[in-house]
Image (cartoon, rainbow, N blue to C red; front, side, top):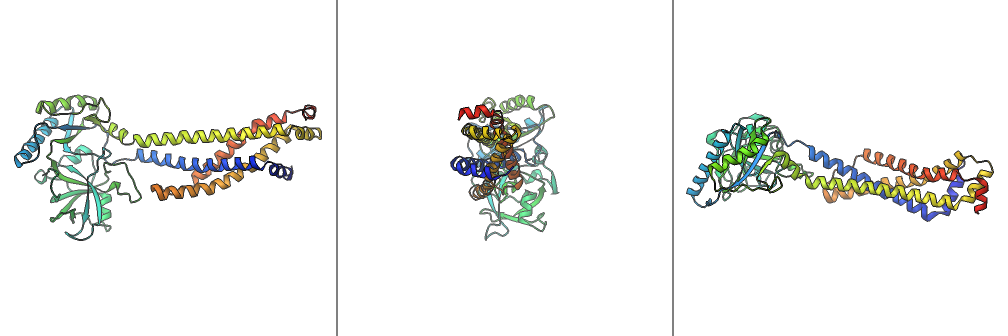
Length: 419
């Protein structure tokens, strides 16, 4: 079949042809980038934090009637923390526990700059977590080099002074950033405003910050464990429960804490965001709730765009079939088969679709370039563009098939009478 009659027909219907081609192009650009973002979001939501997330519980508590204003208050708070931890570790549902302020994904970023010398430029930045000698076991962190903290190395932090512990444990990612030659163990570093060095005595394999953010600098893995108890009225306890005892521990742990201090406050959010007793599964779900909603919204928008594009192609094809009843009848009278009629409309639609897809591919990469500049999104893989192009071409042909079949059923006599 000659393509010249098809091109001639398309030139007579420029407006409809251009609109459908542009609709296909815009749909391809939006859907490909949306699919890429959705995939990236789900990959990010499923990435491991570096800790053993199973059977992990976080309890937020506030001790009433006391502040950390004096040394006596700090001593009282420190003694209270030690008593709480001793009580928790004796529970039959609990394997280990420690006190801190945050966990990976739990929200709230406490960061410090890092220098190699007491003065000069900062070489890196880290998010830190309070820890003690029980932290590695409680979180299931894998020690790649060095050693754990000792009990006599655990200090106090009341949020009012400069942090300069004698020893620290860092993530492998931070160690590699600070010392690319791989000789971080035993090296001293200086935190923000510190005058005394902190020596790296241990390196853990992987530990995410308390945020879900993962920018192009990949700082979300630059973490440090500080050997300090947080001696403030508001604090959190992280509890490693025995296998299968997580549900029981959510009941026994608060009871044990209330037994130590009946006046303490543990928020009760009925399992929601403000709940003072949360499993790590809840923490992860809350941390990525916005990402999950965004991914679902983009998925719905993509489906709507594809549906609108499909209906648009079907509507235009149906309109053209109605306008060409006389021409179709003449072709049938001259010997054209139903297959020839279907083939004509599908080829015509394919030409429009391919043109739209070519324009759409250019728009897709332009749109991705803009997203990279505005939101630090990674470069779009050509695989997504290929998948999107194939889907749109199949959708386009599928949408045009019904009108084409309807055109093929037009009888020559009926077409001539309709004219």
